[in-house]
Length: 140
Image (cartoon, rainbow, N blue to C red; front, side, top):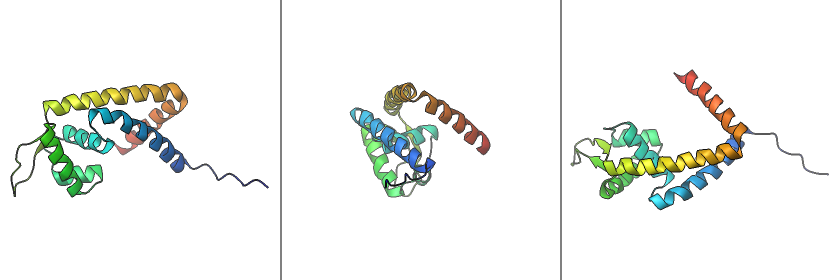
């Protein structure tokens, strides 16, 4: 007697699809010297100039220590400027011209992946777009 298939789980489905595409995204970011986490962190810094380490950690759902290590690497690479970096003072982070250039290259990676996803799964892409529009509209 064959085993019964488990019921459809939207949670598991989203996790599976997300993991597959995140893996592909991570592979394509590697030549840029970025991880998906660092891409997100850098994007948050660009989106909120002057953001603090603690706020960056909250938005990224990582520890302040992880954010600090990443930002130190960003500063050393010339991607982020911490204009107030001194012991005891609050940081004020912003993306540099080099950081903007790297984010532009990463945006091209995202655009290519979006095109590929939409070509392979047009119905799913349309459904995601519509549903996310509803979800984001509800939160505003």
